[in-house]
Length: 296
Image 1: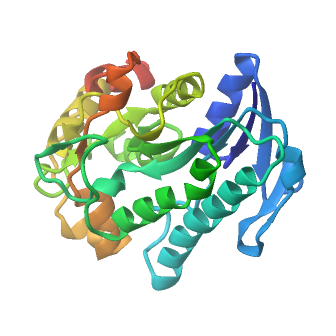
Image 2: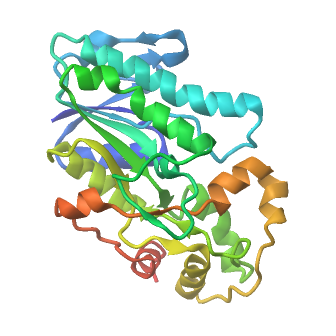
């Protein structure tokens, strides 16, 4: 297959690109960086080299401003929103107008769609929740409408917390846990829906040849509370996890709204669509996942 990828230089995008190349697929990088771009685009300006997308088989759209790297000022929230909706709308409309459009469009989304669910389990049939991230994810998915109306198979990749020791949340907390200074966040009751980077990549690649359309949770089958995640990480590292982190700590460091929605919101999302379709996770439980990615 010929697969175009936006966000191809990010953690997930670069891993997906490498994996697809190893499988023998041709990967086309869609980027704002002309030095690496096979197809140049600039979403804020509405620019994309559309004709270079004619005749490709699939698009994997992963581009978007990082959610957790900066405090959520009004400007940063606007950038998080526009980087997803503006870019998705541009590429969706572009694909719908091609003479020879791709048949598959896998477009990024997030489990933030469900908002705070407490202890309740949710899956792809569950309704939208409330909050900034829920609004972003909902509008992100709506922005693919042009491609859907053109008959392209669209899949919304509702990704949870991606576990990778070299990036994201894991990279930030591992140094503390390795020193024996890790602990649960707040009361630790909030559920985290997670997936290893390897399973994230495998699942995205698997979706290219499936018949699935619409939303799909890119999460492992066993979401865990922050308390259980903390215990599992400490066990995998052979370190104690007895020092709890008061809720005000992350709020001071990251800002109240970001901390509430990213760290303390409870989302117990199940990957019903992929499980029903027969996908086999390499890391179905948090213990298997952490021991696998940390080499324990």
